[in-house]
Length: 74
Image 1 (cartoon, rainbow, N blue to C red):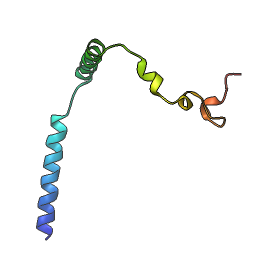
Image 2: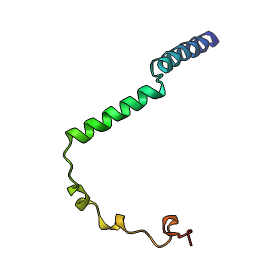
Image 3: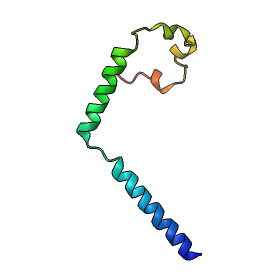
């Protein structure tokens, strides 16, 4: 039974090492991908804010006891 668990542990370690190596990206490629996605979304989808009217009005008003309603600048 111990050999089976050792084999499973070895196989899972090998699998996750391969997955990590395949998903490794540098910062520059992530920036390029993010910019490409942003530009494609901005150019393909229409610029409409009509969906805001469908949001319930209660989401636009803060509750009385909310950390966001604290004014710490004064």
